[in-house]
Image (tube, rainbow over all chains, first blue to last red; front, side):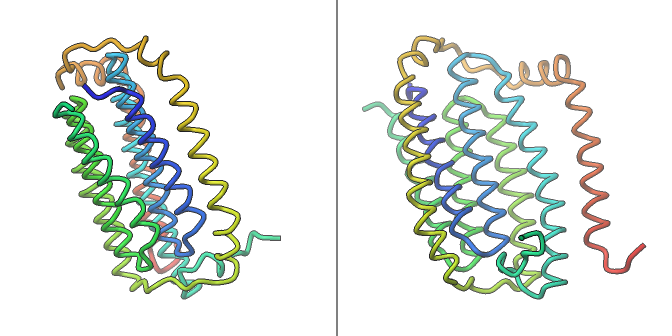
Length: 100
Length: 167
């Protein structure tokens, strides 16, 4: 049996790598993918707790997170297509209208 | 060292290497393929924990639907190699120490609470998918129905955003 905190530490490491990717990457599609990576890390923690506490609620939450991620991917990629069409670039530094 | 622990370390190494590869690849399509490796490894970990349904959903929805959508958009927009700018180097200098600190704090907090987690752990037989279905369609049926509204709104939003001519 794998101890639960192994899963939790792996989840923390994956979340941290997702944050690094979010900060590092300049391509808007890759930034969006790093958000998906962070969601996956959180899902891992949910399932680990679900197994450790012997309750199924954590797995239900994971299903809801996956549904929200699918909806988010559909809308987010629509926004990315709009940005690419209007700005002719995928670099986030060219999309700074809301910056002061 | 027993077999589940070895499988865990193989899959964990696969996931971490895939996540690092997502960061260092310059081309978005290579990053997307790395992310698929991470998702397959996580599905294996879910199987290891006895969550078969979540593992199947992870592969079908994440590995299948969402990542195909990403790859499709990358190819549609003909995304090229991302360019480095002064600002992104600055983000690297400031961001990496902060992210390492965040990961360190999280891992330290988890490691410190490991006794409490172990004390609360009550291993039983893995719950069958039938129990999951009972929970989802009885206790959580209202949120489950709400997600269908969410998906409907997302479909409408994606159509409105992506169409070329204005209404």
